[in-house]
Length: 136
Image (tube, rainbow, N blue to C red; front, side):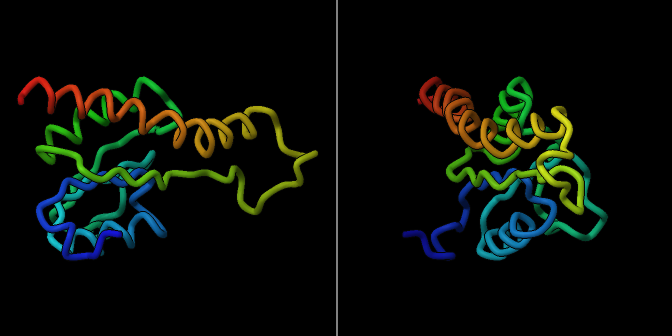
């Protein structure tokens, strides 16, 4: 189990890191000395993120975007030692009944909440591990 002081000088990438739990975690690990990059579909308001954190616009549901984000995070942070899969979507708020939810919204929810966290660790590892191996 990691303690907050274990994050010092670690590269931490947080998907969905511009609001809610992801944003709180970005502040916590940045204050613990981590090098932080956060991803989200929308840029955060000025001052919302820790000043030293990097923002990378992305959509975790888009597989090609995951490769780009992994490479960019690796470049920004030097290394990514922690990946936090926090990105999610619920569709329209307030939530509609399932019977009233259109297929496009349901597909977006499944791509973001199920496929994104399932596929992204594998893709991140391909980029980050191959760079580490190539430079070793």
